[in-house]
Image 1 (spheres, rainbow, N blue to C red):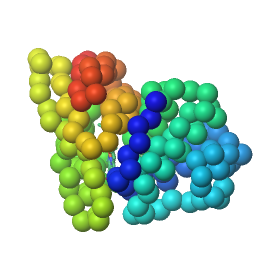
Image 2: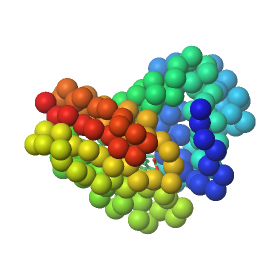
Image 3: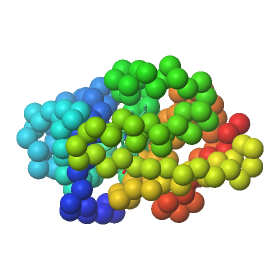
Image 4: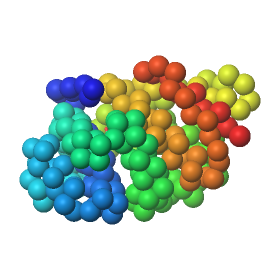
Length: 182
Ligand code: HEM
């Protein structure tokens, strides 16, 4: 069940990515139907810097789950993989040249989110804290006003795929994800 986030807004970049994914993998009929179900115009387009109410973003994610008959966790996995491997490499190339492993990449995500949103009005980037259980086991603590930990899990799995590393990713609770590196 998706929560309701009355006062929060998210950058349109997330929905632009979702739209690209849906058009590429599932076609315009399905995407247009999702847009309509979520109360958007059927030809709606999203721009990276646009502000979209979280409530509307989550309605659209909910419509995608309904139309594809998948759970929120499955949608988060598909989205996370597409964001990390298809969408972000095109528009945020620089970060992909800086980091050489999933460990390096994940450990920089707190700084990256903070830095890239610092001049974006109305951004509410997630923050991450890192704690090592042992040399290969990282606990990523998710700090956000949203409750999108399933997306964190999907994004981390996507990072593993990008670097061809077999990560073992487990949601421990609504704030903590355990990542075992190979
Ligand atoms: C170069 C790669 C990445 C860039 C440039 C990036 C950038 C962004 C931006 C601009 C937002 C929207 C923030 C807002 O509207 O306030 C966002 C949201 C988010 N990002 Fe990333 N991101 C990247 C990779 C990742 C990765 C790998 C993870 C997980 C490890 C992650 C976790 C999240 C989550 C969970 C959100 C949803 C917002 C929330 O939960 O509060 N991102 N990201």
